[in-house]
Length: 230
Image 1 (cartoon, rainbow, N blue to C red):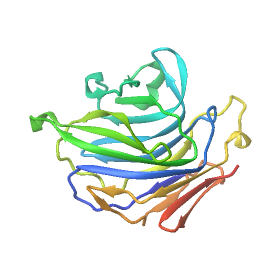
Image 2 (cartoon, rainbow, N blue to C red; image 1 turned 90 degrees about the horizontal axis):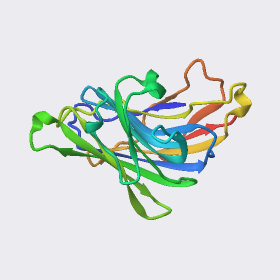
Image 3 (cartoon, one colour; image 1 turned 120 degrees about the vertical axis):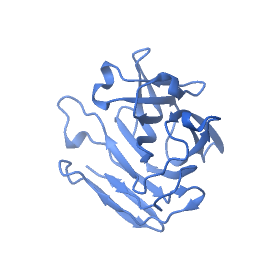
Image 4 (cartoon, one colour; image 1 turned 135 degrees about the vertical axis):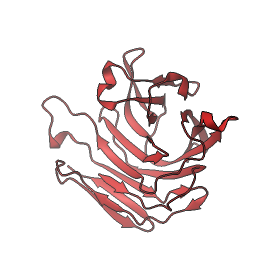
């Protein structure tokens, strides 16, 4: 299930924030990715969100629930600042389908609750070197900010594209799996805040044509409610 936001056009990126409320959570082993935001800064795409099953390729283990922040455009590890208990992912045999990208990931337990994702620009001393974009996550249940790491983007002051997407994805099923193996879940999206200004939710939900009709989205008191019910 995708939801395409409508944000002001032509703004140089300084910050963006969006709150995701998990009402009915998927569980570890469900292989679900809740992309709080998938957008574009300048010419570089990025996404950030919650995943049920983080694969740590360094140790070839599943680290369980956590946070992903990825940026496309090149695959240089030097362009990533992992959090203290996180790691960097660059293109490898396990990510051959993702193209040139760099990603920071960290374990973070999540369940029912509200999670605010905030991306903040940190320009470099030499503008031609681009800017860092740092991720912070506010866990409302813990009343705490959590460091999600940072990634370097090529252009300082680049424009934020006005049509970012939030989506919920089941990215893996058992070899013989089908619709009955897709977990039920419910997610609320609250209005994004670009450069300190709240944008009302006035976008459009959509379901890719090859997805069974098990997901729906509806407006609900200033939020968008996404429900998956196999």
